Image (cartoon, rainbow, N blue to C red; front, top):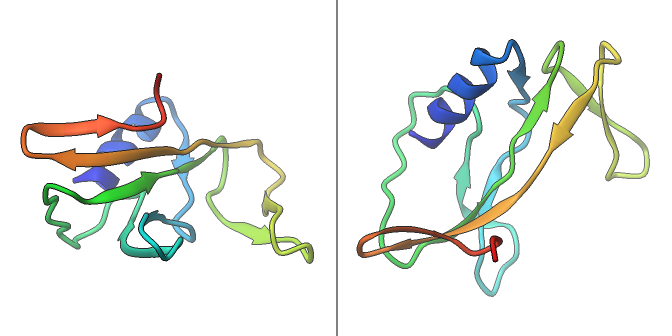
Length: 103
């Protein structure tokens, strides 16, 4: 469970994870299925060889509630707490996973 794993790490450090944004598939369409939740959830996502998708959680030091600014890009936490977001692209292979955004 991708979301559960991310949320567990976030919890271990006393942080939270934003629920509004998700990772996404990579294909000829930029934002496509599968959509990957970065928080605990009850939706099973079967990982199949050949799938390529992003994992890009936004971790917050306070509340996970956030607002998008009028520039349609910038996101800020409602409580003014700091947040960090990062992204990796992964490929599911026959033998596991390959992180494409690492050297």
